[in-house]
Length: 269
Ligand SMILES: Nc1nc2c(ncn2[C@@H]2O[C@H](COP(=O)(O)OP(=O)(O)O)[C@@H](O)[C@H]2O)c(=O)[nH]1
Ligand SMILES: [Mg+2]
Image (cartoon, rainbow, N blue to C red):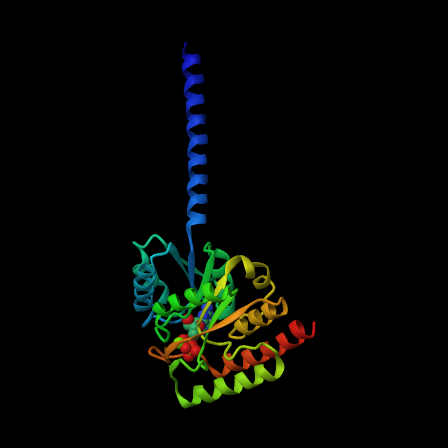
């Protein structure tokens, strides 16, 4: 008799676990399918702005009335960025945070965030409020209108409103000329920290991107162009450096080196 009860109990527990696993797989599948928009935010030493940015991203995305998630990648910040993120998002279930064990540059963080993202559309946005997140809605609408594979922000669009220091303006202009000279990209600005992509369209391409610094965006766009993808532009509102900048002489030198590498590997390769 005891043996009979043991067999029944065993069968019930086995059945229970099978049902539980099936339910878990089902919920994961439903949740996976349901995410329309993933917002990826690379964060490096942004302790002053990160909480405000995340709150604003939440407010904006809630107002879009779409299913969304936010993926934050802390690139081994040396200040209080990571604890600030954890404290801010602790009750927001659709916000996930990852911390890199070593600083690897903005491009590396974006790539990691992209592969964690589940949405049909993936947006990259900067971790400060230089670019108000609510304008992402314009990017989504433009993507629909043009059936584009990507919509990228441009400071040079005639409708853009940009507040920028003259030094940064000059550097940006110089980089634009360099990129125009080297690449036939047909975009007016590769570097704005707000971009939107169709995940399925760039999944394979992004895994090939090698630039880990600020030239990541350029390499991704160059590779997309090579595959004849449709890249559209959006006007932006941008007020630079509400919260300081991490663009150093070292970062610029790395970016120029990576840009030349992209020229030789992607274009010529
Ligand atoms: N992951 C990562 N992100 C970075 C790094 N440096 C800058 N960023 C991010 O890149 C974005 C733009 O940087 P920011 O300092 O605001 O530059 P600026 O606005 O162009 O002057 C922000 O989201 C930063 O957190 C880095 O080394 N690693
Ligand atoms: Mg900034």
